[in-house]
Length: 107
Image (cartoon, rainbow, N blue to C red; front, side, top):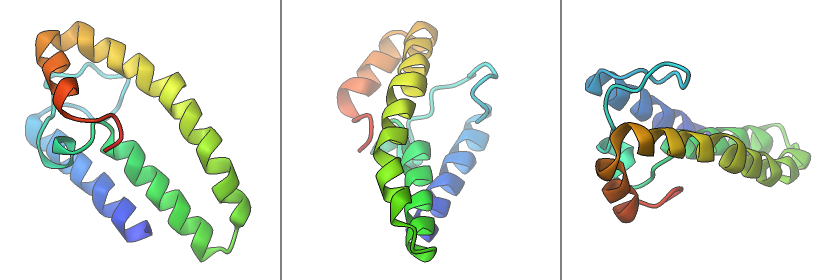
């Protein structure tokens, strides 16, 4: 799980760099990334982070982390992703709406 999460997060960084847009969320997005892992998920970075945390929980035999993961993902979904989606729709308009119509939020 951890290797999958690291690989996914590495791919996210690679495709953002290739598109010439920052990964850091507080910097202005220059391009809508729809290639690589973004062909399958609008949020592969958060999926990768969840896999990394889940793998770490297994490695450390810490079942409480699995209990904390769903509430954490709900906070990310409604506290972070919803804000990012509003920003991307304002920034990219119809291009982003078309992308959302074909690619799921998580996978």
